[in-house]
Image 1 (cartoon, rainbow, N blue to C red):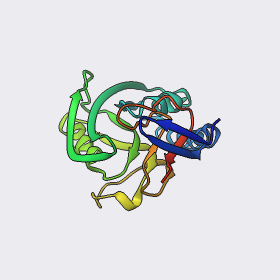
Image 2: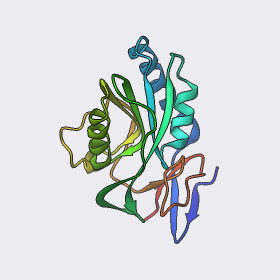
Image 3: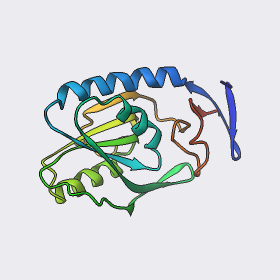
Image 4: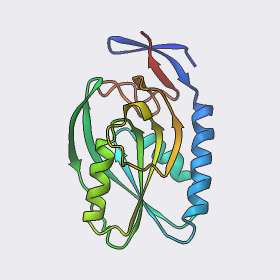
Length: 180
């Protein structure tokens, strides 16, 4: 584990270790297992960023369930574009289903707000939101409710554990913060 890594043209310093992250994932999974025990939920992981969190979380889910993936994009480089694009949509029916959205990070809330609306439009009975990270100071959608949040962080730019800087750095097992 290095304390400083370089991704593209930027340096990042260690922020959260893989062990700290996995402890938080364990807590979220335990809550979901207890809360949704008889619901047979379908987990909808948001690609690309949430794929590592989704894999670690889903391995800890012990209740009957399914998982699928949806790809959305709102970032370009280090900034949100403010526009949410659906790149790949769902193929499974959401009608009458209990859905758990698995997201890597909720900052502005725009992506999650749009995704929840889409899932209800597709007939979901109930939509829960599970995120690895939440940035309360960056939230622009005050009505957005996060049901399962592993960790809250300041409004800093981070990479690793699935999160990227301009599509690089996702493979880092720990989370690093921009070193400014």
